[in-house]
Image 1: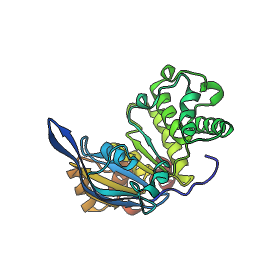
Image 2: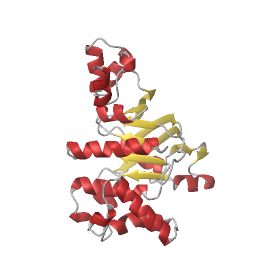
Image 3: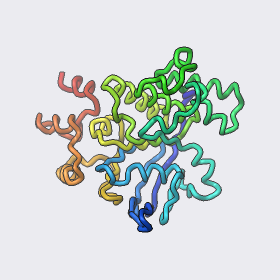
Amino acid sequence: MTGPLRGLALACRGVSFSYEEARAAIPALRDVSFKLGAGRSLALLGASGSGKSTLLQVIKGLDAPEAGEVLLDDVPAAAAAGAELRRQVGLVFQTPELQLFATSAREDVAFGPRRLGWQEPDVAAAVDEALALVGLPPEQFGGRHPYALSGGEQRRLALAGVLAMRPRLLLLDEPFVSLDPATRRELAKILLRLRADGVSLVLATHDVDLAWALCDEVLVLDAGRVVAAGPWDLGEAGRELREASRLREPFLVDLWRRLGRDVASAPRTVAEAAEALR
């Protein structure tokens, strides 16, 4: 990223959405409401089938809610005034192959900026910057075919294709699935860098430890309904809610609790824990 961005504020008001199967409506989201401030990060948690992926697609505009609305910087995203704001929302799918189609990594990343009408020098600069940011040096990876890359490299390339358009709100659907530990750590560093640059993040994940490390707030879905929204609740009520949603407590929070320490000061990363225990 060339400099700090002001992230987009996000809100959903009473959002509902259903899929149609055998001529019957199957509810996926039921009256979902929450807010996320500009530059904040949100962990979207819940069991498989709880509606996490559907919610991301509705926020991006790939699916239209049957009730309620999505707002970006307090502007209804479906309104004419919200069209430009929605173009500043990036979505990285869980399966990177869904976003890779060009004959080279460079051309794949360039597709989005060109669709936005950027001049070629700006496109080239954005491509180089995005590839470098995700750890795929353009001089080494730019000419390679996307399907010649490893699974982790494909995940990074898909992210680069979104980052090249300089999104102010980034939606990520299970970005850590099937990644080896080293690649997971590198991706976490990238997301922390984006947070520091001012980008708003919504991270759908089953990994509560990464969610704890990366996200200021949580949104827990169960069968398409919101069961918790807002800052992390580390008290007994929060523990019971996570257990009811089949989510374990973040490891470092559990460690702090077992050590008899104040969980309100629980570290977010192993490095912070090591420093606190010295």
